Image (cartoon, rainbow, N blue to C red):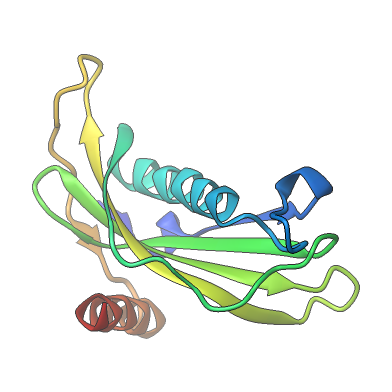
Length: 147
């Protein structure tokens, strides 16, 4: 069984000119792609199998990430089904000079583990190993209900 903390992944992307929209902020499609990629890695870390995206809950862009700054994507698995893994994903605007962060996007993705033939395959239960991980799980579940 994998644990919540073992599925935690964080990745950074520097917002380059080709990542921006007409207003000089990160293009929402790029942010969603990065969230999908990092979320799949988190799900695969738990499942030990290839995982594909099955569902994306609301994806709200609260504020832009300007060109030259950093987009930080965090992900962790917080619940499982028979073949599915639910992953909380957040995007942050981060200043590369100071490290100051501000959340820009929040979502919950569902991934399905698949075998070599592309058929759904069972995943292990997720273990919540600490108070902090219990808190993360509860925050993710509460966030699902609000969306």
